[in-house]
Length: 204
Length: 204
DNA sequence: CGGGTTTTGTGAAACTTTTCTCATTATAGT
DNA sequence: ACTATAATGAGAAAAGTTTCACAAAACCCG
Ligand SMILES: NC(=O)c1ccc[n+]([C@@H]2O[C@H](COP(=O)([O-])OP(=O)(O)OC[C@H]3O[C@@H](n4cnc5c(N)ncnc54)[C@H](O)[C@@H]3O)[C@@H](O)[C@H]2O)c1
Ligand SMILES: NC(=O)c1ccc[n+]([C@@H]2O[C@H](COP(=O)([O-])OP(=O)(O)OC[C@H]3O[C@@H](n4cnc5c(N)ncnc54)[C@H](O)[C@@H]3O)[C@@H](O)[C@H]2O)c1
Image 1 (tube, rainbow over the protein chains, first blue to last red):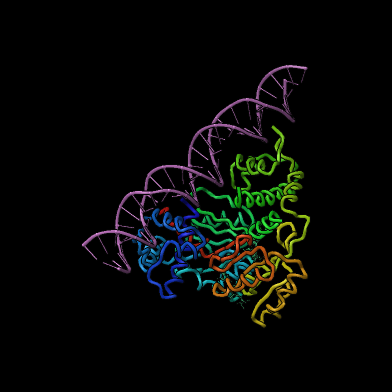
Image 2: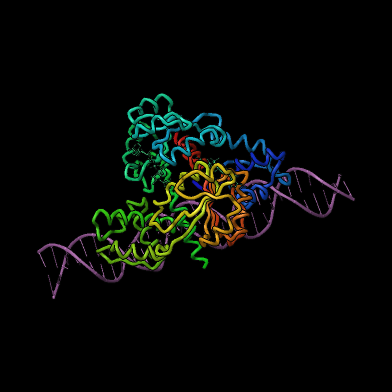
C-alpha cells in the first residue's frame, strides 16, 4: 500500500471537494469510486488503511472525510517548492502556482542559468543558481521541481540535494540517481504518450 | 504485465540510445537496470516477456535490442497526435514537438475555443474546434492530448471520442469517463507534487 | 418496534508484480 | 582444448495489490 494508495487518496480528496460544491453532504464508496475511476471496495480499503470509517447504510460524511484527508496530507502547513529550469514546462508550472491543490503547495522561486529567463515575469520570481542556498534556507524549502534539459538534470539534482533538498519531481527524461533517503518522482511525458500509442496499436 | 512493463521498456529504449551514443555496443542487464533505476532481474523479466533474449556471459547487443524495441513500439510508423487546449501546458507540449522520443509521435494540430490562441505561433498550427473532424480524418489521428481546464475536460473528451479518437492523454485533474475500448491516461501534476510532500512529511 | 434492505469493514482468495535462486551456457584466459 | 567465470533465463517464492464474499451494523418503513 504505497504510492497508488496515496495518489488515490489525493484523487478522492479532489472528487469530494467537487461533491461538496455540488451540495452533497454524504457519499457512498460506490459514488466516490465511480468519480475517481476505481471500485467501491478499493475506496473502502484505501480508507481503512488510514483508519477512516464511515457508517453502514449511510456512507461517509464528506466534511469529516475532507478534514481527515487534510490532516493526512498536512493541508494546514504551507509547503514551499522551488523550480529549476524556467523553460516551457517550468513556465507552465509557474503560471499554475495559485491553482495547486488546496493551496498548500507554493512555488516560491524559479532558477535558471540563462540570465534572460531571470527577468521574465512568469508568476514567480526567477533567480540565478547561486541564489539557491539562500532561498532554500530562507523559505525552508525541501521540495524541488526539475525542468531542465536531460543532459543537465543529474547535475542539477546533485546540486539540489547538496543544498538540502529532500524531495524532487523530475520532468527530464532520465531516471535520476539519488540516495535512498531522497524522494524522487520521475515523470516522462513522452513515455505517457508513447504508451497510449502502444496500446492503440495492440488493439488493432 | 501491463502498464509498468511497457513504460520500463520505453525507458530502456532511451537508456540504450544513450549507451549507444557513448560508443557501447553490448550491455548487461545490470548496467541497463542501473541506468533505468530497476533491478537486473526486472530488466531480464521485462525482456523475456517480449521474447527478447541475450547471450549468457555476453549480455545484450544494443543495436539489435533497439531494433526489437522499435518494432514493439512501431517506431517506423508515424503517429499523429492532436492537442486540445492551447494554454500553458498545451503550448509547452507544442514547443516540444520535435523532441518527442524517436520522432515517431507528431503533434499535427492544436485546438482552442479562444480565437486569440488560434493565431499564436506555438510550434504547431492552432484551429477552432469546428475543424476537429476535418483534421482528425485528414491526418488519420487516433490519439489526443487534453489540456483544457477540468470543467471542460469531460465534454472535450466526449467530443473527441465522438470524432473518432481512440486514445487520450489527459492533464486535467479529473478522471475522465470513457468506454472501455478507449485508452485513457490521466496525469495529475498537482498530485505528483503533493505525493512527494506527503512522503517527506512521513520521514520526519 | 422489528423485519427488510443497504452499505460498510475486513479477512480470505485471487491476481499481479518483483525478487530470489540456481542450472545453464557463452566467453575469456590459460 | 579446458577450466573458471560471469551472465542469462526461468521456475519458485515472496511481496504487494485488488477483488470477493459476507457478517455486522445502521437506517427505513411499515
Ligand atoms: N516541454 C515539454 O512538453 C516536455 C515534454 C517532455 C519532456 N520534457 C522535458 O522537460 C524538461 C524541460 O523541457 P522544456 O521544454 O521546458 O525545456 P526548455 O529548453 O524550454 O527549458 C529548459 C530551461 O532550463 C534552463 N537550463 C538549462 N540548463 C540548466 C542548468 N544547468 N541549470 C539551470 N537551468 C538550466 C534553460 O535555460 C531553459 O530555460 C526537459 O528535460 C525536457 O526533456 C518537456
Ligand atoms: N499549467 C500547469 O502547470 C498545470 C498543472 C497541473 C494541472 N494542470 C491542468 O492542465 C490543464 C491545462 O492547464 P493550463 O495551465 O495549460 O491552463 P490554461 O488556462 O493556460 O489553458 C487552458 C486552455 O484551454 C482552452 N479551453 C478552455 N475550454 C476549452 C474547450 N472547451 N475547448 C477547447 N479549448 C478550451 C482555453 O482557451 C485555454 O487556452 C488544466 O486542466 C489544469 O488544471 C496544469
